[in-house]
Amino acid sequence: MSSALLEIRQLRAGYGEAEVLHGIDLTVSQGEFVCIIGANTAGKSTILRSISRLVPKSSGIMRFGAADLLSLAAHEIAGLGIAHVPEGRQVFPDMTVEENLLLGAFTARNAGDLPARTEEVFSLFPRLRERFAQLAGTLSGGEQQMVAVGRALMLRPALLLLDEPSHGLAPKVVEEMHEAFKTIHSRGTSILLVEQNVELALDVATRGYVLEAGVVTLAGTAAELHANPAVVTAYLGL
Picture (spheres, rainbow, N blue to C red):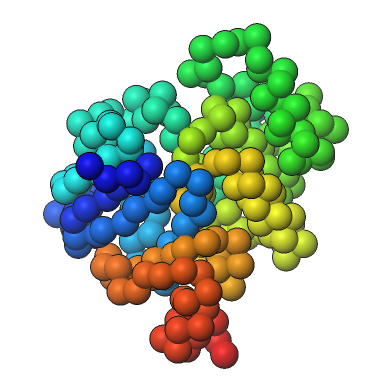
């Protein structure tokens, strides 16, 4: 029996007739910060969507602790302690910051600790305290990303899935977000990050996978990947 928190073996997944992932092997252990890097069409987001059961066609082995993810529906995933921050933020624009955050805790068994959960989010993103009663649709892109991450953290997840969290954000905001991810990880949350900004991904993660055309072509520690000539040439522009 594997000791991995998340174990994926020979995952094949796709949409309609098109197979996007061609036999992926990937693990995330308790307390790890793992990144998946690769080009835009490599299939990175499809891995996260498969874990969240949002991809219609998936086969192989995909386990989270003792749970067989492939036997579950999408609405059951959050109850296991997996929170997914999708690409493009996808906040509810006509709801306040407070309402967006509370939605993230919808599976919480103890409603009495919601203020404590909210304070944990504010400790990471103080700006959200100032914007608490504001409609999410009126926030800047960076603030909306903070809401999206904060909403996921309200679940107090064991595993946080982050899909292209720096996309479309100003460099200063990207830096803030990645510092927040380091803090989240230091608090004990395991993280699986999909990121096109390879330099940043390898800075925050402890280990990573390189995905090309739906196949894992390289895997190793962040330091090993950063020093790998193929990664340097293809992704770091050095």
